[in-house]
Amino acid sequence: MAPGADRRPDGERHGVSGDRIHPAAGRGFEVAVEHYERGRPGYPDDAVTYLVRELGIGEGRDVLELGAGTGKFTELIVHTGARITTVEPVPAMRDALERNCPTVRVLDGTAEAIPAEDSAFDAVIAAAAFHWFDGVRALPEIHRVLRPEGALGLIWNTRDEASDWSERLTEIFDRLAGEGAPRYRSGHWRQALQRSQLFGPLHHRLAYHVHHVTPEAFLDRVLSVSYVAAASEDERARVLAQVNELIATDPELGGQEIAIPYRTDVFWTRPR
Image 1 (cartoon, rainbow, N blue to C red):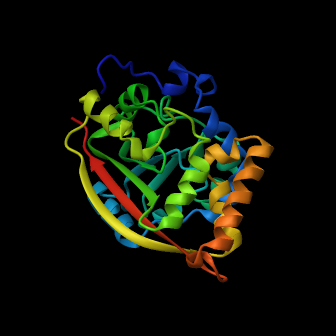
Image 2 (image 1 turned 45 degrees about the vertical axis):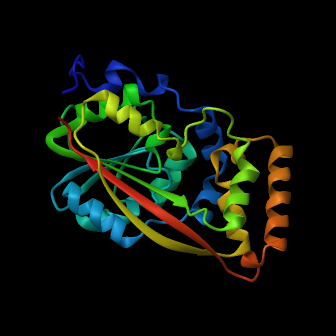
């Protein structure tokens, strides 16, 4: 158990409703569910298989996914036979998760206040979510709910910005994020893990895949970005106008299908 943590159920200690998530995540993901489902890619088979193997996810195992969103990752592990519990703080995302993954347990909560008993899970997973967490509070909570031989798995899809258009796309909406906004590529999440000293070495595996979308789904991908979804109507209109211009002028984006290259970073570690 994390140093200093008491052993009462977390909902009793903190109260799920009293915990806040980043405003951009709260506002953006609440209104962007349909864009998220249509525009976001899943995760490549080799990355999922690697994480399932290293975390020992399978029949009879108890697995917790934090910040599960609409179930993009969850639906890829339901076939393992594990008992899956998901925690998602955004109501609209939670509703979509229940529709997409009706066999898993869906709870309202946050990584900083996990509504679960101590040592309840063999594995904890965060898919495209850990960078949103307050590591100082979330890591002791994750440590608390993990069994001694358990493991923490993290996975992210990031657009491969080797092409000019992908770099330009980032420039279009990056300014909406503001200084110090939570991002995977900032590396702050890794620093939080290292400073906590609650977990051992971080193991890494890299995979690549391509997400093929229609031009409409390409716009959904842009609108699924929390900072874009949470922006004012005028700001969103400005972003969409610039993205439509990019689609119209870049030869790689013409036609009825657009190929978006992604890299998938997979990490796992064990509690100390």
